[in-house]
Amino acid sequence: MIDSHGFRANVGIILSNPEGKVFWARRSGQNAWQFPQGGIRPNESPVDAMFRELYEETGLLADHVDVMGKTRGWLRYRIPKHLIRHRSKPLCIGQKQIWFCLRLIGSESDFNLEHSENPEFDRWRWVDYWKPVEDIVFFKRKVYKRALKELEPLIFT
Image (cartoon, rainbow, N blue to C red; front, side, top):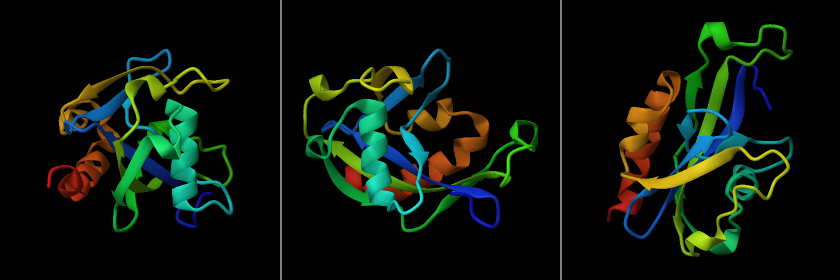
């Protein structure tokens, strides 16, 4: 779903463990790491999209996590001009995201990155809370920082 301004509706997931570390995953076949995220389908709520993406990308079910909260509104980033697919209609210039903060209440054995036909990730690890801001691709850095800052009190109370 791309809005009238060219932003694709999306959800992002910050998944923490009981020690306050966050799930950080490598995109399949790339040296690029990110949080789970994905588009919201027509007639799908952000919460439904979050649980669908969580399952598709990590193999985790709703019973494996505790939803601690979400960002108050949409956080947006623009795609660099050289990466925009100008032939696509409607034109997508970036993403607007609702970010969710989850805590793992299941076990690490519940993760299954290979259960889908086209796995998004091929490796994962727990990292310090602010580490993703250093590692994420430059054009997503501000959104990651804003999401982590807003949701930090939910993890470190």
